[in-house]
Each structure stands twice: as structure tokens, then as C-alpha cells.
Length: 251
Figure 1 (tube, rainbow, N blue to C red):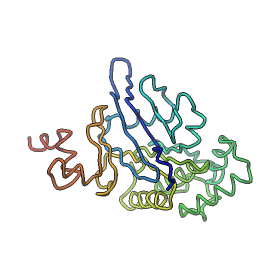
Figure 2: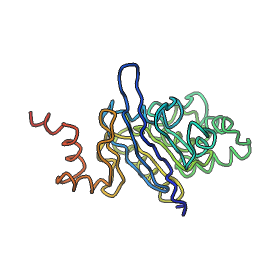
Figure 3: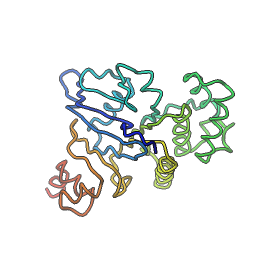
């Protein structure tokens, strides 16, 4: 982890609307360097909208978004150089090989061909896929495709990795493998992760957590701190109470 105390990600008072519908309202959060942070929210809470603003797919017209101290509006090149992203929807070309997908992405980042190949092979090795580099993506399992996308997102050596519901559609074993892989990457030092999910079991008790509900941040802290503040046994009980799910279940 760097000695620099600048957050890997700092979002301050960001709002966004789709016409008359408010998707985000005054959202603020921070992810420290070398940290794993869970962005927890139900489907429709605003997680994907927030990711779209951080990655400049949408323009934030209110508040500020900074990646490693660089404002995404004022210094987009520097901000995006420090940012890797894995979106919820698959973005690999199934007809290209694993290596071709990787090197094509590297070319978009201006990485020279030889260096791109070296980095691709190294990242695929870290992902446990070194033996699949020449195979067509369509021959891989869903979990393997996700690991390729994570490896691809790290080719330009970003400091911050965003993952939007990365385990959706995967079986329990594949989900466990993806989570373990990403946590190992954080543990190796230097990488920060914002992991968006609606699945409570993907969050550890000591993880930093931001709870997003109906476009607003309604709670922050470690999973254990949030449970303690709400005087319940675990994060799931706290989340159900905060979002009204507990009342719905009781009814």
C-alpha cells in the first residue's frame, strides 16, 4: 500500500437524473488505497449509474469524482489511467481467443504489442488461465470469462478496480473463486477495489461497506460496525432493517 493518504476513489455530493427520475442524490463515498470496499444495494439502488459516472460513460454535472486525486471531469486522462472496470454485462468477443481479447484491449490503451502480450500472459497466469490463452472465449465457462475480464481490466496497471455485480449468473463455486481471486489481488498490495453487489455473503465482517438505497448513501462503515450500530447480529439483518425488507418479510 502506498504511504500516500489520497483516497483511491473520492465521490463527493454527486447526483444524477434520468429525466424526471432521480437515480442518485448527493452521493458521497471514499475508497482508501489498498482497500476492498463493498458497495451494497438492491437492484435499482443506483450502483450502475454511479459506476457510469465514475468511468465517464455519463458526465457528472454535480459534485466531484476523483480517482487517485484526479478529477474525472478536469483531468479525465489521468483519472482513467488509474481506473480499471468490469461491467455487469459481458464485454468479451466470444469469437476471438483469450489472448486476442487481451491484446486488443491493450492496444486501446496504447500499450506496445510486445509489452501487451507480456502483461496479458502475466495477468492470465495470476487469474489461473495461463493454459487457455489460445482458446476462443466462447469455450470458457462463465467464471473463467469473468476472470479474463478482470485480467483485461488490469492490463494498464490501474490503482483502482471497479466491479459491478461481477458474480451475477455464476454458480456458487465460480462466485467463490472470483471473490477469492479479487481479494488476493488486493492482498498483493497496491490495488483498491469497489465491489458492487446485492449479495450479503460476498462481504466480510471487516470489509468497508457503503450502503446505497434508492439513490442515496444511507450507511457506511465496516460490516461489523454497521451491524453493531443497528444492534443486530449481522450485516444482512442491518440491511433488511435499513431498506424495509425486514418489515416486508414480517408482513
